[in-house]
Length: 133
Image (cartoon, rainbow, N blue to C red; front, side, top):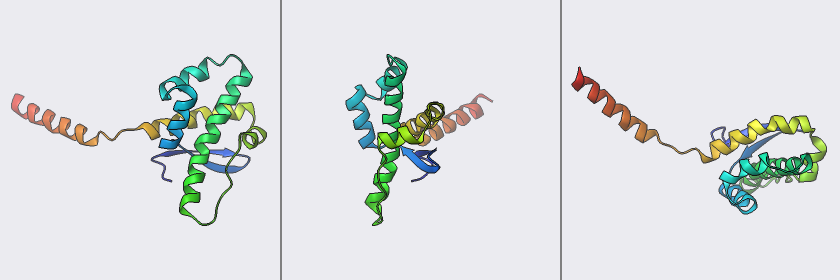
């Protein structure tokens, strides 16, 4: 994967890429009713255990996307992460730190390329500036 679409975290001394794919987006939508509801659900979790479960599920989902992409493209398969593995190899403090990486992966995954619109706006602005001058 490229850094344009992913963010990196370390779990149990091993580095993993988190990536928001269409498959992951569908899974999040099924669980939360859409990406927009994800933040609300995480913030409104009734207790610490529930909040941790949701973060662990999300980390596992996003990390497994890059593993599944690797397995699709390569004959040497890597094992998928499980929620149990993530629970055992992380501390609650690390999970809190991973929130930034989750946010980064989500933002990169939903990023839209508006470069052509931006260039058109710049061209129009410079044209107007010349006329006004």
